[in-house]
Length: 422
Image (tube, rainbow, N blue to C red):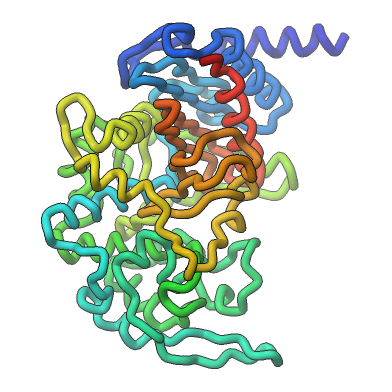
């Protein structure tokens, strides 16, 4: 009986699984680029089970190898309340998958000689020079001490500035209680208001001493705005999104785009508590480089393929190969405490580059891959990784803002590598 029920659910699911269409990259059969078709079909089975169990509304998955798209499908529902089927061109709130794009924007300015890594952050926003470091004493009190050295632009890219996020379950620091969550400042005020707010807080660590996930890339976005004299979204559109044909990438979805926004279940399937992706219905007042952009999975796989190609796609060069190599190398030297694995459970064996996590070791991680793999994910349920050794780019979109998103990241990567036979 259980097999019959699952078969019926899978049949209904298959009707909603969109076949290859409107491909953002050239297409290939799985066997042409070293994949097993039956292995890739496990992705269909996996999301059929998850959707039938009402653990995720739907998904869009894109997998490319050797620059060829071998899997590009939409599953389940765009809006679980309305029952809208998931289209391939669904638009996802990318959350922290905004960060690699903001990093690329900053690196284009570096290539122009306008934003060097060793520049002092206070040269662009002087208030950062006066920030103190919060040192927690044995009795729990906090002592404020001066910075041992200034925050550098380099620290923003690799999250060694001492800035952090508030409300993170993986941080017990009392400093975290003083910080807002990742999108609150962008909703509440403009870039200048964000800078004024963040510079009144203590740093969690001395600059350059520890990886601490937080507002560093948001601040980098503010620096990009100061240097370019454009809003971050405008600069990204002109220098990254439009050249790459990322037609739906934006910080502010239009009325025409809004019907394609992917929405989560009203309640978290794991806890039963209400959940929402606030950015879907609350416009931001600034273009936050850390968390606030939107795009389709087709858009983002073009961005990933550009990086895998060494900074170029279809004749549009965004960065030089040398700059991409520098971006995707580990920048956490032995003098820096590496806590990347604290952010996500499968990040053991990873360091951090300029806006992306970088795998530095064989083994250790919960998921297959190779040293040199670079990636990052989004708190609302999106996932992106590139493996240069395997010439592989994978991008996944779900609207799953709860802890289930971490489960999907691990399972998807297991299925992708399990389907590779060459």
